[in-house]
Structures are given as structure tokens and as C-alpha cells.
Length: 353
Ligand SMILES: [Zn+2]
Image (cartoon, rainbow, N blue to C red; front, side, top):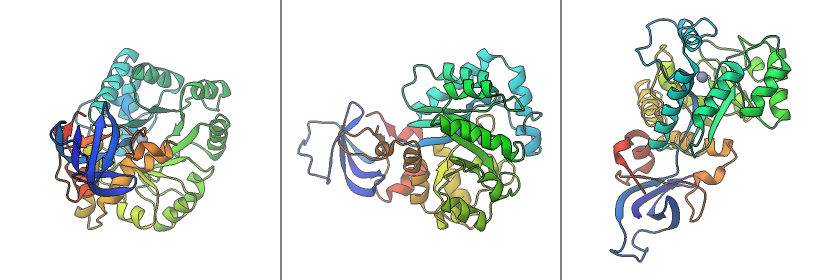
């Protein structure tokens, strides 16, 4: 297949074509120079690498009802929020099936990798791995130890199977716990991440100690907080739809202006469908609605470029012939490709390559 129009990847947008065979880019160039007139299927559109959903909680996907109109704490605060009561009363079989269904749909919707935060200790991670079995794309799971004081055996078991540890927040976990878990992660070359400044501002002194490999939300962070996060080169994953349900929004314009490495995720599956496309459109539109617009290029990098670097798979964000990126073909007008991709992509415009 030859896709003519625009190529958009870590090197930015450019007019051109990409020839794709068996899901791999085999050739790129300027429009009209491919020399295969009429012998191959041609599509007019945009070729991009696959986006990454950098923050999900797929474990609560089985709860599909309208989220109650109540406080954040009553819904997702451990251990008494609706979510945690639900997890405790749902069978492993049902949870595994729900996670597996979502992981399949993520791939069908064009996702290239996913980073999930799994509660419920070692069982939670085991169930997640069972759900992901046989699926052929990078699926990362961050576990959360449940025993306090910290039980090194539990932590060890979790890190044996998980890609890291993802904590609720500094409000739930004292510094000593955070430090010992971060040390355990890094000893095993795994990652340590946590939610921060989600419902109210927390001190950067706290969530940056120890330095996390990723912060999630930062809805209530100030300029000074974000400057420090940027200085420490800690990436921030934003989840605008999830925040919006509680009347909040991450100030994306500020993240863009201050040069914070930003990633995007869809957060709890019980709150929002884990579609990165809906998340990106909402992020763009809500930023304009708030009078704090952001560039489509910033959002493109947050979903298609920055997470691949974070994962240590930088080349998956670059559409070079023979490279490891799995291209996604979108039948969209090739003008202004970042805007098109970020705001107008639906599953219906994806072309099987
Ligand atoms: Zn989360």
C-alpha cells in the first residue's frame, strides 16, 4: 500500500508518501517519486506511528455505569471509594475478562503500547498478566503493594511480574514507604510512579522525593512546581477527561510553555472509555474552551513521541524504512496533519495497512 499525503512522526510533519508492506514501512519519499504507478493500492491520507496510552486503570473496566455525581474521594480514593469496594466484590474471572477485552480493543483502536496501574497487590498484577497473555504489543503494568508496613516479600513478588510500582499519592504513602519502594524498583531496573497534585496541590518537595519516573495528573500544580518537575526531567501524564468529571483540568498550556515532558492517558476505565482519540480531542477542545489553548503539535508529541522515549523505544516513534515503528494509516486530509490526527481521528478513518 502507498499512502500519499503527509508523514507525521518524531521528526515532525512533512508532505510525502510511505509505502507499507505487512504492517511495516518499507519506503518513504516525496509525493510522486515512488515509481509504482497503478500497481499498488493507493490511499490519500496521513501516516503516523502508533500512539501510547500512558495511564490506564483497566482493572475497573467492568463498572460501566454512569459515575455517581459525588466527590472524587467517594469514587476512587483507596480503600473505601466505590471503585475499591467494587474491586473487592468482583471475581478474578470477571476482572480478567474485562481487562482482556479492553486490551484487545485498545489495539484495534490503533494503540501501540499501554501503561496500566493495577491495584490489589500481587493478585492484581497476576490477573493483569493473565489478561494480557498472547497480545502482541508492549503492555506495561505497575503494581501497588497492599501490605503496610511494607512487606519485602510482597514487593519482590510484585516486581518479579510488574514493570514497576504505581502509588496512589503522597497523602496515602509516607516518605519512608515511597523511598523504600522506589529503591526496590530501581534495584531491579523497574520504574516508580505516582499520582500527584490531583485533587489539591501537594508539595513538590514531597512527590519529588524520591524522584519518580513518572507523575500522573498534576491538575493543581503551580508554575513553580512544574518548573521543578521540568528541571528534574520527570514526565507528567495528564488525563483531562478523568479530571473533568470532578470539575478540574490540567493546565496544558502551562505544561507546554514550561517545557514539561507531557504524556497522555485515559485513567480509570470505569470513568471513561480508554480511547486515546477521545482524550486527545477533549484535551485540545477543553484547552480552547478554558481560554488556554495548546498546539496540536504538543498533543501529538504527548501521545506519539514522548511516551516511546520514556519506554526506551524511541525508534517506534519514527517512520523510517525497515524501522520498528508500526505505522497507522489515517484517511484524513493531509493539510495541517497534527491538527487532523489529534482532533479528527476516529476508528472509521483507520485503514488496514
Ligand atoms: Zn490513575
